[in-house]
Image 1 (tube, one colour):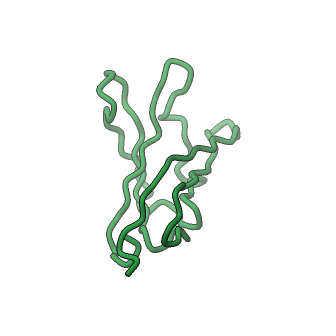
Image 2: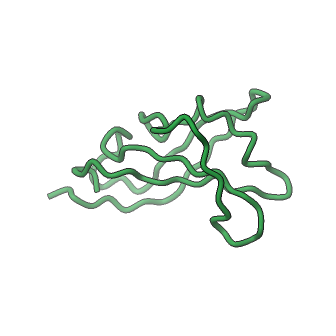
Length: 95
């Protein structure tokens, strides 16, 4: 909802090839928005027994516009490697 002040949770999933705990929270952005909290939150989002990292953003600060169908997450791991990601979205609160 682009008109609300709500927080939008976004997860970076841990896999056998990628350790989500290595994401540098200070580099993570969703569109134009930076992460709300400085403390990473780890939780098993996908039920595979591994801890995924969850970030929160203010939806209205992301730069996402009514009708957009994709959100793009950018950031880096502590070693400096970029970690771009995207997912499909549906905007509400546009009328």
